[in-house]
Length: 343
Image (cartoon, rainbow, N blue to C red; front, side):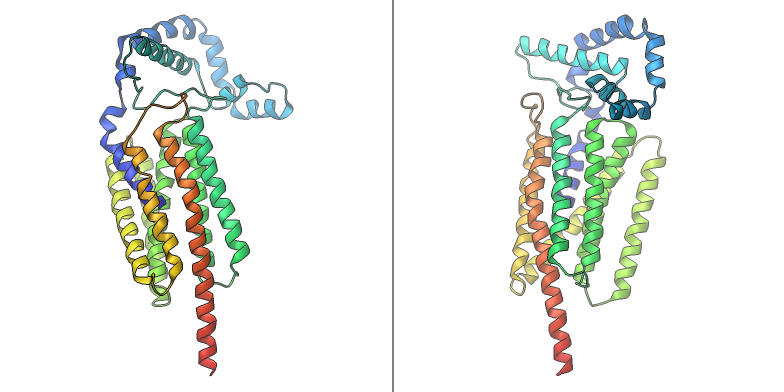
């Protein structure tokens, strides 16, 4: 599921966090000399022009696009703040890669990331495209859910809230992979956790369905308060606390994942459609292989992480089929119980 994928990915990421600040590529003398020379030749000599460019507002570039006065790659890149120093690092990164390849050395990483060929200023085009694909699948799934399930069905509102949380997370995943800044990184991690926590919340509410409405309200409030505290803690820390974020994701995701599996196994005879949720969980776990066996980007675009995003899109269809079947079945059971009471 989303929560299992996200929490395991964060575990893998944090385990390499000490390596992320520097990698073989950016530690190489070739790269460092290239960047130093580029900065001296291009950025310092053109400091006035550089400062002027940095003072331009995002809205100015956006207006240019709307008016079609400057519809080109440079305008897109200005919109997402590619400055002189970034240009030097980008060009030197690929020159360093060429030098490594010429010597038949393994392709290096730079600052914990593989080298990509950017498109319209987008740092990781494939991850952006596949994040948008996930966003579309969730939107399409929600629309089909609305078309198939009556508004008075149990959990109709709950699954709407869950879908919106997921779509918001994929929006920030798209933004983060477009341009990696501290702010976009924070929002990507925080809202990725919102999916983990939302799945845990939905699991608990589904299990205690009709047993205690008061408990459902308490669980919801506790989850909301915990998320706000989580967001505040990560936001106000000077340095992003990867360790804390990892632990929270792992614990929440593990409890949520185990809870869903146990519930599905306990219900599979009574509700045969829960196999869709079980298969969803199994496929989600299997897709983690793409994160474990990391490899350089194919065609400088498709790395294992982007393919992991790609794999999560089609299996999400199973999830929406499950919640649709579940809501329809719960409504049918509710109607049957009301009829029995009238007899």
